Length: 112
Length: 115
Image 1 (cartoon, helix red, strand yellow):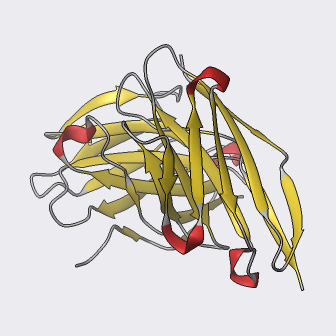
Image 2 (spheres, rainbow over the protein chains, first blue to last red):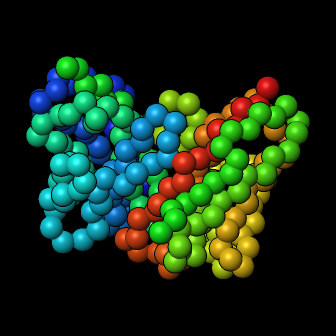
């Protein structure tokens, strides 16, 4: 079975500050890992994904994530937060089978 | 290039009724997955359709059923609605039976409210 844990259901950052969202997963097979963003009353938009190869993955809107197998982590970062980054972020794992298993989400609030 | 579309956008139903939600996948995609997202939670996998058959199912009762048409579009049906079925229902599509590293593209969702 696969699972995802996102530490912190809410994160508050100041505009221009570092954004760090934590994600830990469990999987019995090498996983594919994803970060999605959801703006209010919208569906999910893919930020980035890890499949194989380079463990530091760059995505859209200045986000990046690093796959650390030894720590079973896939934390999402952005060096400088922007007001438009206020949204909910979901980490997801795809291991055995075709389904995505999501974490509970982290809501990001950006303060001016 | 049209993305994933879903209809209707919003829906209000009464307990015990039945509902049908519709999804058209992104052009070139042949696999459709459905997810339920309750308020304040992450999406939960309901099932996935490929080649007009249900290929994988999550932990949802038989009240939840689906269908995929030859043009790859899909329907989600929920019978005997319960208050707990109130949620955002998301459709996602992916290519090539959803295998491998292909990401799933999500539609805007259908907001179902059961009263």
